[in-house]
Amino acid sequence: AIERTLSIIKPDAVAKNVIGQIVARFEKANLKVIAATLKQLSRAEAERFYAVHKARPFYKDLVDFMISGPVFVQVLEGDNAILKNRDLMGATDPKKAAPGTIRADFADSIDANAVHGSDAADTAAIEIAFFFPESNIHTR
Ligand code: CMP
Image (tube, rainbow, N blue to C red; front, top):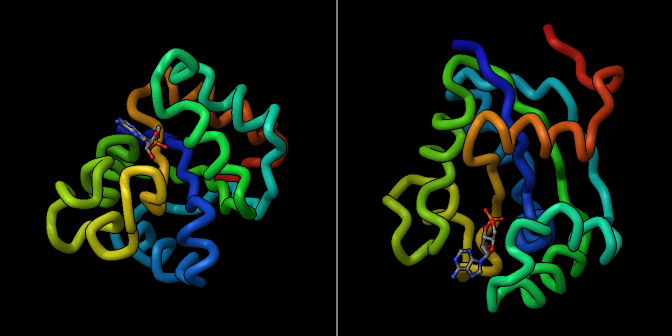
């Protein structure tokens, strides 16, 4: 089925100047960018976006990292987009990510892991709405 998912290119990958290389992987996999913005998250925004992880020991470091520089936030649309994006990203920990995945090729650590992607349909809808009103999403 055609799905939408939220993708964030994190501050480490933006700083490495590989936004285009990462987006090219999505496009080669037939995912379309239907919304995008380069954005500096405030601490409050990052805390809200990752509120589900509030009780986890890595929460503070995660929020600190996500506000360390601008992020490139996109909505990707395509067949099976949520799982397809997760396959393209590879495992959360780049040490465990399969060769050829975005995290294997661009990530440095479990915190600086290059990309975020929604993990399921319900979270994708919530995460997309967090960043983009429907009027800023352009299906084509
Ligand atoms: P992300 O997909 O953005 O969702 C939460 C992030 O927390 C995750 O990617 C990692 O970058 C970060 N993180 C740090 N430590 C852990 C951990 N032990 N388990 C899961 N995520 C972690």
